[in-house]
Image (cartoon, rainbow, N blue to C red; front, side):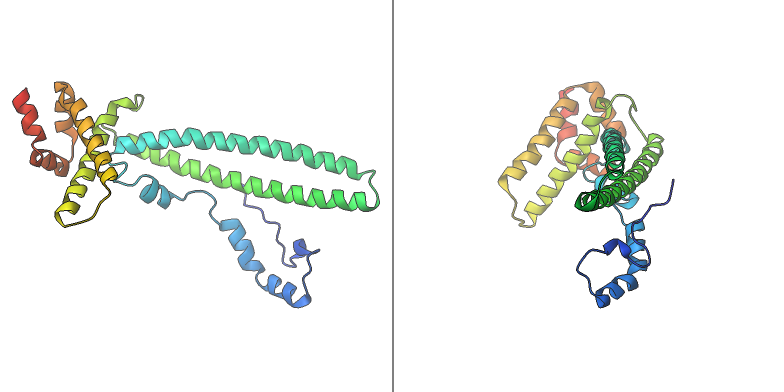
Amino acid sequence: MNEIQTPFNAEMTCFTGLDINADEMMKLQKANGNVVKAYKEAQIHRTGVELETSVLNDIKHPTADEKFWHIHRDLKVFANELMMLKFTAKEKEITIREIEFMLEDAEGFEKERFELELEKEKFLMLDLTNCAKDKIREIDNMSNKMDELKDQLVYSDTDIEEHQLYSYMIRYAREWRTVKENQQHGGVQNFGEIMNVIGHFETTWRIIAQDQERFQKLLETIPRDVFEFLVQEKKIIQNKEAS
């Protein structure tokens, strides 16, 4: 990938035209190295660390399958965003050529305005290109993580619904367990939020428990802590008795 480009040179002539005195210009020139470094290295889109710890956090996405399919959805969105950046860049290219064409016969104030507009459009184009480069970096991070997760999948990599009940059961069981633990220690919680957690947990459990094959699959795949919580809640015992 080509290096990130910057409009800032050592003389900081890009700021010519602002009401800047000599002392202020010296300060800008002194800061040039750090400005260029920040412009080239500043994060625009998510980093790999943010992807791992925030987007794919273990509470909301407790299984490799859930993480895999979340990336699957995001990749399509980000590819679309990159395509829209391409269209915007193409429009900028046309605008730049139009201004350059009109500059050939322009004079006086009209010429000055066209020159200023050309400088602005080229800067916007540069910023757009750098944004696209960082979006490609983000897509690459996500694609690599998706490949890594594919080897850890328990369920299908072509049918998203195959994993969802089990991944959601793990998530909602842990959320409900946390709510109950907080209640036991006198924690104050919003009634609406509690009902929402209970609703997710009980509904997901009902769908799994009423199907013997789903229930058996759950027993084979859930983590130990979730299994113990379901036993504590007498969910697994009740299901066995019912069967």
